[in-house]
Length: 480
Image (tube, rainbow, N blue to C red; front, top):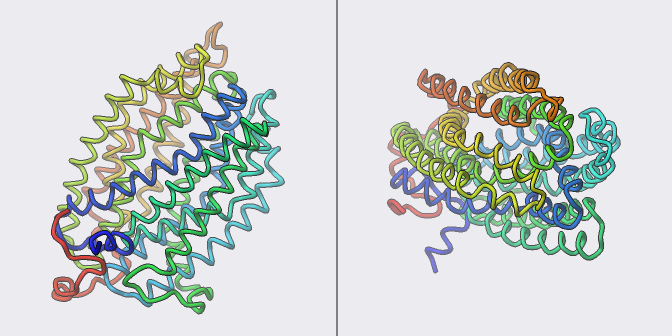
């Protein structure tokens, strides 16, 4: 029972086997991320089955725009995760509470700002990205409702990120399992029973995310081993806000650049017709699951590096990086094989239209090889982010998306125009993405090897003797 209780709350990643700690921390995190991915995937499956390919395409057309408008959350989440993990590793609990309090203040302010911008502009934005006429009204309605419930989504994603920075990856998992089930039930009720269409899927999502946000806030208020968060920690501290944004804004700008590129490419995708949009939507959903182990490992590595740098344990950072590379390559190779073998069967979950399945299968076979490259990209990039060096990801993203991905997609589309595909062959979209992933992994590794990140710890490490003698908050067990 004591061992079970130790899993709930802050986990110390500065002791024990680096590989064992990464695996123990990553497994609940992976399951939680898979559950979160189910939110949008269940929407797509239910809508694809009960509304049709037009509804599936409508949801897919909104995703790049929605992601673009959420970049501020990415900035706050990254800044909070880095500062939380480093302060936790350094046992600087008072400053840790100030970081959490100011992150909450930023969540509220940024949510209200984005809602004020996004809700009235949903229609013009859908028109701007050349959404096909036959799905534009559905896409606009879906996006407006998603932004009505933005505060719940923002709170869940950022508070769960803070919990992970403390080493607690199990509680967000259990919350997500509960609310994913809730989302599935509501999706079926609103779409299949009440016939609310894509708007029913949006309402199911925001109601479930609101419940997950409340549960995460409750867990944060009672996390084991830390002083209670007090009301005065919620007063804006412009020094802490500045630190949060200084660390997080490069990550937010990276996501903004990526989202802008996705919007530009989405406009090209939309011009190819609703069947291509539907196939691309299904592929993105499957791709989200296939990429999830890589992203999960990256999140675990960032927390692991942050805590160990805060504890002054650079030796464990190096050992953990090597273990993470081996783990990432093993997972991504396995996933590549699974996608290559079972791709068509996965696509049939979303649609029964033969043209859409054939297009999606071809896209997935091109992208599958890139999963191995993305595993390396995530590990080396997360090591640097955990140390507080978030700028490389910004300029690497600029190179690989703005200078490589977008021009390559349009160039290949122009070279593959035909009577069947007057705006270019859809496979040009996947090839350009594979080229971008591969180049990004190479540049990320070279920057990691340069080693500038080793000198950029945000929190002063606690002395080595203290790191060796201070007991872990949750447990001090070796290995798994």
